[in-house]
Every structure is written in C-alpha cells, then in structure tokens.
Length: 125
Image 1: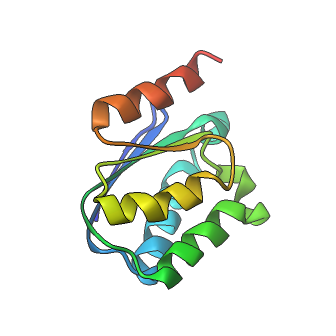
Image 2: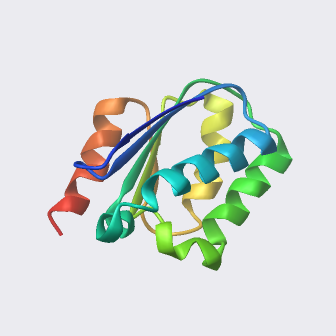
Image 3: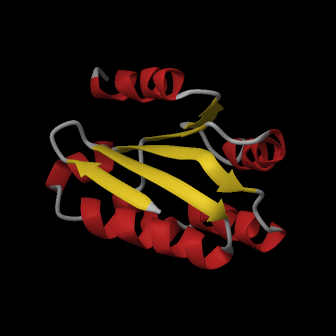
C-alpha cells in the first residue's frame, strides 16, 4: 500500500496492492485518518482517491469491514467529502459498487483522470 497526503489540495491518494483483506482495509483507513486529522478545517473537506489497479479481489469480510468504516458515525470528524475508487478489476468493481450505494460522495471509475474530476468539484462548493 502506498499513501500520499496532499494538504494543499486536501486529497489523500492511496494505491492498494495485492489481496484486499480486512487488515489492509483497517490499516489504510487508520493511516488516512491519522494523516488528515491535523489538517484543521481541511480535514472535513478532504477527498480520497483510491487506486485499485493492482488490487486483487477482496474477501467478503474485508468488504464488510469497508462498509462498517463507511457507516461508522465515530469517524465523521475525518470523513472524506468524496471518495473515488478507480482501476478495479471487474469482480472488485462489483464489490465496490455495493459500497458506493451506502452514502453520497462515493463513486468508482475506470481511470485516475475520471476519478480526479469527481473529487475536484468538492473544492468549489
């Protein structure tokens, strides 16, 4: 997993590699939350770009863990305004599609350019 935090743009970029398991989901979430928590007001405005081009199919338990993280009210303080997943394999796309239905501001795309276009408008509002 690779994580790049850009405070000026208020974007967290993560590249997920290998099999997406529950431990990786929790570690990614915690690392992003820790990274943006000191961004002050920008933490509430931050967006996430999640690169899944090198990720393998997720286990059902890891998808459930992602769903719990998305619905967790305790995380509202560092909740991303928008999350764009991109580059997933066809099967992983089906799994991510279910997550995107859980709340507004989540979407998946086939490429980085489209994903980036999705997160950019959040800074104009």
